[in-house]
Length: 166
Image (tube, helix red, strand yellow):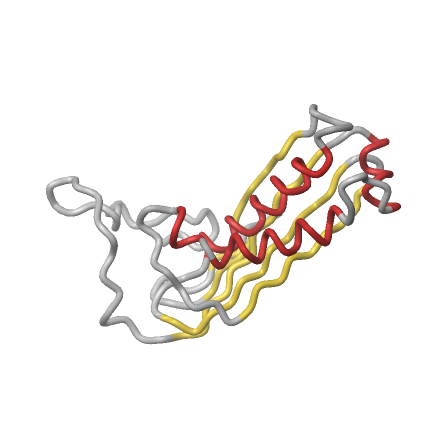
């Protein structure tokens, strides 16, 4: 793998030799510590941003609800991504950064000790957090944009470490 670009070997592991979708067999892999970090942003009107910051949304604590939704999303990734393995997660943390005047940056950090990585869990957590922010604020701002969902970092397993240059 090219550690900088994230490009994998030319083989797509979720397809068999006939091109049919398959779940990768990880039974012979070693358990290792695995971590992944994903980020995305929700861009909104400055007034929406101010309402979130001061806790003034009618539906309640936007970031608290988004944090819980992101954690729940990470835990359910194997149920919504067809070829993702169900994974026992050992930690999920969601962080928010209010960037003036109109962006909420979301970071999801996911950990496990297991046979397969948690990249999909981190990406799912960040996206579900963003969707929850949208849902809780759509009454005042339907023009919000969820943007730039990406893997920032992953470690563990045969492919080693990936770190995006930002």
